[in-house]
Length: 310
Image 1 (spheres, helix red, strand yellow):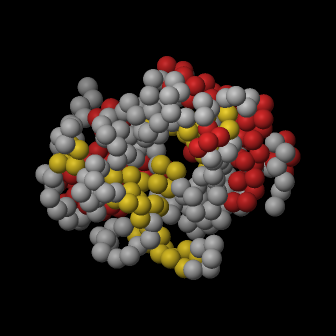
Image 2 (tube, one colour; image 1 turned 30 degrees about the horizontal axis):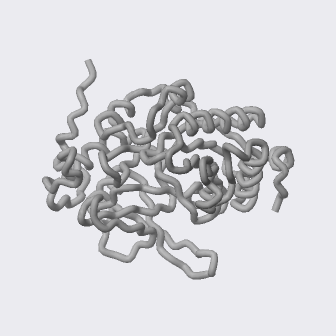
């Protein structure tokens, strides 16, 4: 019989990993009664499935020192003051400026970030040492207000089908927010400009084929009654929520991998609690072959969607 998920050993976990956990009993999500120590316990429960997605990637953290209902902010640069388990590495930015970016390699890093009130973990689509070549693409389905969730699930399956027609296998992630991410694992072969060109052309084709359903335009005015197919996460420096990350939103939802069979039955993108996500993490069949994929963005694929090679 499986041990039930209790989220009750966070202090012991932090101590074992050498992370000093202050105020472990501080309630982070009052409505759910979730404490900082319970967040630590959650990340230990999902570490075996989360770390393969997050390790060695530049990160952006959403930090909420006063809890998720107060002021939260993105932090991507290491400005000091973090526990040593939160690692950093220098990256040259577009303007030539060099900044130290966070990354982690083990559970202790997740605990260290939690100690510093990081409630969300957002990842680059590439890893050290070669951050110029993405190993994942993300299509983020962002709905206009008032659209039924069925509009999102049907869009996700349409994206899947179009990718399958190009011999690209994809995987659905409920974001813990409003939408679904369709994730495409890649062999890190092409650089960022080609990845962005492919994704932009792919969603523009969908928007041109069904302009009443989709837009590839970021403008809110263009989104009325439609779904914005966000391809902009597929460029150097952009991030997307990491699978298994908590979200700093009401209800403490989690971004969770799901199967394509589940997608048509979904009613919301924020339906997984910490306990439900920790239980789901024990399911070895979810995204079981994700890291076995060695898909490549070929010149033929770029041409098929009308994207120009850079």
